[in-house]
Length: 566
Image 1 (tube, rainbow, N blue to C red):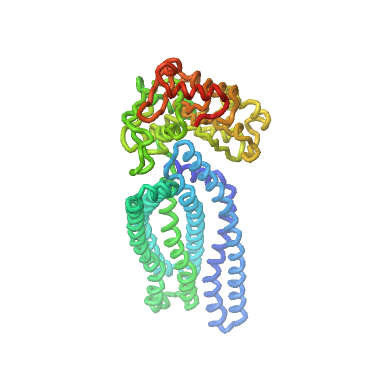
Image 2: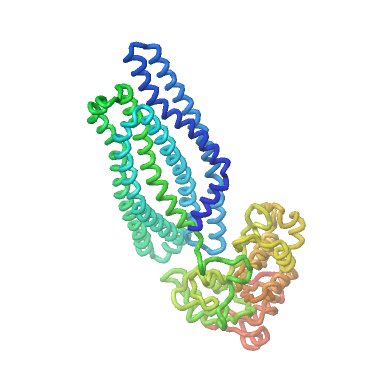
């Protein structure tokens, strides 16, 4: 409903475009009126009356009207584009923003298919509805001008056909929605499978994965067939509303001629029905029947979630944790990259209180980034439970409560403010944006780019500058739990320390850092040492006394303090 209201509001706001659309449509309606009326006059006042010159003049007028109508139709397409394209742009912005903020699994289908369906169907809806209304008006006015008695033959079946068509719209919309839902599910399955095809092959899981994808394909096929069956039911509407009036006009021709209807008027009425009303009704049925139901369904699918799913413009409101819940809790979590592989994490238990600062260290390949991926919902544990502020992972509540900053920072074109506000539903107030930039050390780059409104060229930025932008974006996020997966590896030690201290001091925030310098571990309240079955957790000083691996890591860091230990 919200998406539909947004689209209708955008269309109504462009009232000048609607006025232009109406004016060009009137030109088309004039063509419709003259085609039947001129033909009747050419017969009655011209050829049947023995005046060929008058008949030819009326036919010439009809030809000129067709040319004028064609010109008006050409202008209509340009006006419709001016009406529809801004609506598409708003939908794209909404879908991309929702996908980035909420890790929406259906965003790919919405962006690549459903937004384009909305654009095309809105254009089709405007074109066929406008065409039917103005064509029907021109034809009915023409019938009344020729002989009001003709309306009694043409109007009842026309109304019956329109009503029959209207009765199919709701069932068709339901089946259209079922089809789009199955398409989203298939896109989500393929999005999860395709990046991991090598792992699937290595683990020998081809048959299992193929069976799951095949089930999604079959479900989409069943939905498509049900949609096609109801589409066939629409064929009866133009038959009743457009073809039956032709039969009735021919069947009642003797009675009409006996009640004052001239031969020319009867031929003109047949022209109105066959050349105007029938094509317009067919376009309405096939266009609106597809476009109308599709648009209603797609806008409902594109609508952002309401109630608990609505995100506040406040940077802390959405992430408010339940009272007493730890920021992060892992219970007996086991994960392996494939069913036949050795677990990377095996039975891991971990509790991170709200407001804490944890550093994760360990040798290369021990599972530090894997742990971050599990908490972020990018990976799914084979066994065990992961909760973020009391919310199970995966889940929308957990997704709203955490933000991951990976090693390779993502920056897109546009303004700096647009980059920094990706995780916020509403634009970030400038004062808050500047404060966040100052906190993480982004201010020099912000000034170099010309302020929050400065344009960003991702290719012209260094890796460290991209990391600073990603850090400031995460700092402005509503999520209270920040996961830094080597997110400062391209920064110097002073810049890294500033960023980590900013996140640790964020109001209501909790910080988990995959550390690559000894200084990161020293700054943390607690340090988690991943070492297979010898995993240990404690303060820096405690681990120096109790963990040989931690002492070795610290020794390596001390020997080469800026070298990452991955």
